[in-house]
Length: 265
Image (cartoon, rainbow, N blue to C red; front, side):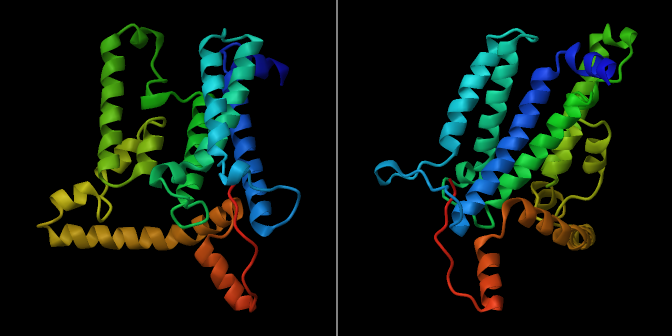
């Protein structure tokens, strides 16, 4: 175990990345627990409202990201400062991305359907960082031999091709495939060659006069969403809690009245 740790984490300089990932996930999970306790009116936690101004946790998150980011730039890769900066950056990133939907919509949508975007972004970010930590490099150029690494043309061609395929997948309305495709080879290729999602820019451009392709794309999207919508909803509810509409329906089913005030930290 010790030999594996030194060879795969310490020597390649991945310890700060590992610390950032762990603190990022921990920050997000702790924040979600606290906000759900505040929403339920339990525990000692309260919203921070100095002078009546609600300070969202994205604010201290931005401060920590700035401190950690500049600290990492000014620290050596194997120094104590680099590790500390990585922890601060991960903590801040967890706080910031937990309110990604608020930043995106410029509105307090924490407990709404739009607020689920924060959970998706956090999960995607953690997954991509974990893949990079495990040895995958962006754009799938990590399997080159030493001889190939001397040929910059091959590296540039591989990078450009995979980046282009990821853009095509994104154009076809598949953002998750595009994100993972920048890290894992061939994922972007699959997303690029398969049918586009209905309503995507690609579908509006190329399926407008092709009713058969449009119908096939819609049918495939329907079956995909029906297969994965319920497991994804259960996972999101487990991580982030019920959204306001779902919570209201649960109260109606149980015959309860209105609950305590909401809070989002």
